[in-house]
Image (tube, rainbow, N blue to C red):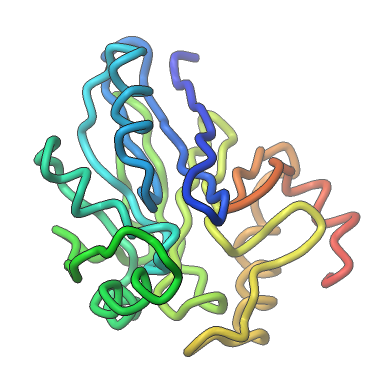
Length: 210
């Protein structure tokens, strides 16, 4: 197994940006570039990795607020989230200013993602699952070979994502976790958008929302 990953806690919200790379090829992606871009660039340089893409789970400021700054030094494609989160990416100038983040211009990704698409890091494939509820366009990234799920703000250690934001939907979130994420093998390791890792099996047994 040459797929490696490092969880990098960034922004005042301590959001988990994940650096994922294939040791064999040196190809890497960053998920949810919310800010602290100089720190992320240093992490790439320390490992001598080649950034090939930025993947976004959803459009909230702590997950997308650093993308435009990152693109100033790395002209890579931005993939995701689902088109239903376009309103969040367009409102980034207001939300980043409101929360005291460095102000981010609005932007659109190079490609909106749909359920069932496949993204790659080196030779490893990640399946895209559309999991609305926290936001309407939230997606997650699942690598079956590595038993790894990049879950954004959908599923956390013994809790779930908030649904009180604009266009959040608690019922949708519960149903999507139950029908899509809990259908994955229990051994799958889950990188949440904030806080510690968990596993599908642990959440099926211990998450009070289920």
